[in-house]
Length: 116
Length: 111
Image 1 (cartoon, helix red, strand yellow):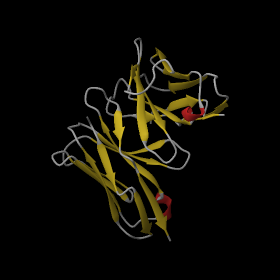
Image 2: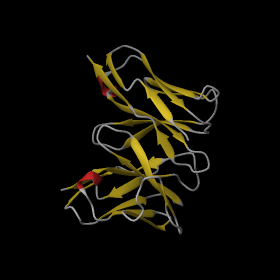
Image 3: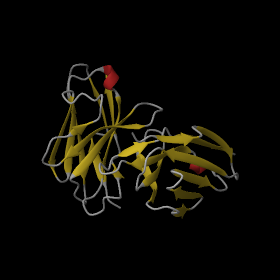
């Protein structure tokens, strides 16, 4: 099956710093990628939709200036958490539907962010 | 607004027993997904259901979809300990493609 990778798999940063998380589709192209956030013992919540070549679409309540998304190519989307706070600590997971098969959704392994 | 409700949220089963997890959703969608999540891990795809009456089976798990009732079920047959995990159903938002997730069912299978 298709593979989505995320880097890093875990990161610890200090309050006020910025962290970049990469999401790559390794063997397929994706014009759209989705970024989800999962707090402990909770479900996944969509943060934003990343669109190749255009601006990301953010869900209500998600600060676009804090969570910067860039979809630089058909295989790479990045999420940058700026001025991180402890409440940003969470599990961030990306997913991508392949251009050739929009019914399938492949999830990355997730990035665990801890802000101290 | 698309909402997805799962029940039960917690399920403690004995090995060898059968049980069903239910997933209701509020508006029309053309895709419903079931995922498994182990602690500290991402999602593992179990089933994608695309049409009314769709039924898919893999090992001890069987999923079905009734689009008229906006209901999907995940049936567990003769549970074994290895099935212990959290199971999520998710429904695709039409035209947008992203998934709206239920709250998850934490399944614990005890000997």
